[in-house]
Length: 587
Image (cartoon, rainbow, N blue to C red; front, side, top):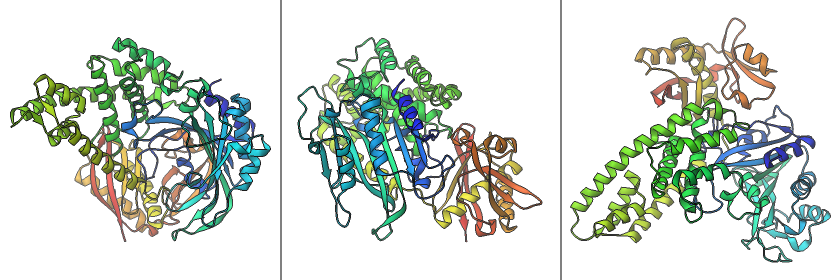
């Protein structure tokens, strides 16, 4: 039994319900491009919404983080990774959470207690030291020398407001050195493997804290890191999770992993992440914006490193690796098998496009050289080759060397660092607020997406289905399946029908029913696999007619008259076979 299966079995045995992994592209959450943590899809329930599976939950969740993209190539960073998590929604609290964590690590995974150290919240401002967690750990046999109270690293909050609280982190001593008697979390030989967060407080707008009436527990453990630890490895990419793909890459390149670690890690990581993004039900395709930009960047970066390994990039090397990942993960994520052809097409097409870009970049390089007044390529041109044509600085240096030229590498690195800071700032802005909002205007937009979905079926085609949506307090974006650009008449009639339903003052209500009955009744549903056996279906209409019926978690207005005037601002292509509408609500 592998780590994922052991984890789920243990927590189900202890009264938890397994919930399906959410898609990597979050639904109706404009704060992030991807699900970045196991808890992210559960935010509404951590804030008080009732979860249909109950109050004790566990899962393995697909996650993607791109803020460390330039760190990929070391032994432990990954863009795609899996998080194991268990949650209590107002059910058990510290004693049970810590005890189960300890039991799983020491009894199920057989980790010796002498290799474990823990941090707890030291206390800060008006929040007291977490003496309760300390006493629980001591009662389980963790020596006081192995319990380290810290101030800043042991208080968790997802955003500027919302649930927050102290946490306790578990560390493993990953070294053959003699294990120190005293645990020091700053000693890099101690590696964090699990985090239990105790959501005791609510952070208000004025930054003051109030105690939550119902306290939650949120935990997280990384599959890649813990698998490597259990197998006695200090390089995650040498673990069994990567064996088949790594050996295939060695075969393709006719090179050993040893001595070529960085490029091989980049390729192994980026191709796996590209597989999961392109297989996602949201239908992401490579582009120059949002998730599509990340997908394009990952594929192209993998291709650049393939060239460094002298791989024939016109061969099927990338598709071969993708098929290995699809085969290995399809047991847990069925969309990989269902969308296998789409994944292969995305990788193949982007590879062809980038080959053309490389050729253009080489022509641009020759132009730059022809305009030089000295024997040095300056930082601006070096960065242009990187940013516009995807040339790594190593390639520019290599080409320059062949012509007896130098490159301003230090200047390039300064520009590159400034570019990184700008990207991180933009990323931080995207995540600002952390928690997906449920403000009054966003609630109106949420209901408007249901009306738009229904109107498109009437005006354009009954086979139009939602493929994704993104809502802020300023606008809505709605992706739907459609094989043509909407005509002006189709846009006008769709907008008018939505406003007609708004003006009719139709009621919005919710009913619980079995998932099977909901589907049989014709209820619209996106990401069917994430819903439990009992679902909530939102209806819009009255006793004479139902205009919309969708599986959804809410929130919604009570009557369509609350929405305001609906206006389509733009209709455009999103990806192959998918169109995108951007719309606003006017008061």
